[in-house]
Length: 424
Image (cartoon, rainbow, N blue to C red):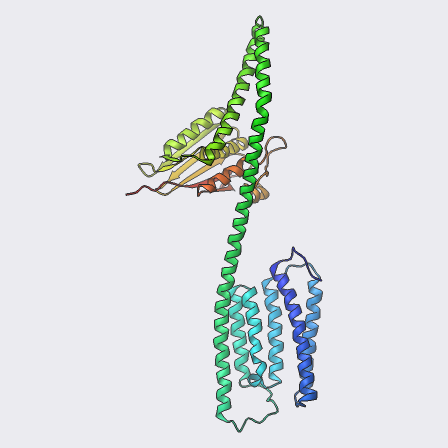
C-alpha cells in the first residue's frame, strides 16, 4: 500500500518498522492473554496494557505520517526506534526487569539502527539500551515467583545475562556498522560502473552515427565536386565567377578531407600505437593547431613545471579533447582567454579561463552530460564537452568546470592528466 519506487531508503525502512511494530503489538497481546488466562500471573496489567495501547497509537500516527510525502530523516527514524525502546523498557519494568526472558529484545532496535542509520546513531542506541538494561537490574516490579531459594546462583545468572548482552551489543554495533559501510561503498562503485557503462554506450552510439554520417555525406560531396568542376570549365570568361567556384571547390575538398580523417581516426582510436611526447611540446602543438582554427581569438599562455618536462601520451583523442575545451571557452569569450599550465613529475594541471557570463547552477551540475548545452538552439549539440570529458577520464584524468573566483563572470575549465613516469 506504500509501494513507490521513488521513495528514499529511510522511507522504505520506516514502512518496514511500521509493519514490524504491528507484529510486535500482536505478539504482545497474545502474550498478555496467555499470561493472564493460562498462567494466571499477577502483574500490573493496567499499566502494561496502557503501554501497549500507547505503542498502537504511535503506530497509527506512523501510518498517517507514511501517507504524507515528506522525506524521512535519520533523526526521525532514530526517534521512532527510541519510542520502541522506551515502550519495551516500560513493559520490562512491570514484568520482572532483567529477569524477564524477553530482555534480549533490546537487540532488535539496535540491529535496525546499525543496518539503516549512520554509525553515530548506532553507538548512541547501544549506549541507551545498555543503560536501560543496567537500570532494570535494580529497578523493576518482580515476577510472581520466589527466587530466594536460588540465592547467589540466580544473581550470578542474571549478571551473566547482562554481560552477554553488553558483549552482543558491542559486537553487533561494530560488525553491522562495518558491513553497512561496505555495502554502501559497493553500491557506490556499482553506480559508478553503471554510469560508465551508459557513457560508453552513448560514445559508441555517437561514433556509429558519425561514421554513418561520414559515409552518407561522401556521395553528395562527390556530386558537388563534379558539378562545380563542370561549372568551372563552362564559365572560363567570368573571373569573379571562377574565383567563387574555386573557393567553393576548396571548401568541398576540405570537407572531404575532414570526413576521410574522421574515419581514419575512428580506426586509429581502436588500435593506436600510443607514444610519449614532452608535455610542453605536446601543448604547443595543440595550441598552434587551435590558433589556426580560431585565428580571431586572442589568448595568453603561461606554463611552468619541472625540468626537463616529463612526457604525456601523444594521442589524437587527447589532443582533440583539449581542442574541444578550448573551443568551448572561445565560444563563451570571443575576445580573449587565458591558458595556464603547471606540471610536476606525475600530473599535468591545465586551466582554461574565459571572460564570458559564467556558469549557471544547472550548468555546473550537468556539464559533461551528453546532449546538454548552454548554447542557443542550432549552435551547439552538447557532445563536445561530453566526449572531451569521457576521453580524458579514459586516460586517467579528470575535467571540472566552475565559475572563476574573485571576479564577476567567467568560467574556469580545470583539466588534470597523468604523465608518464620516467624510470630512474
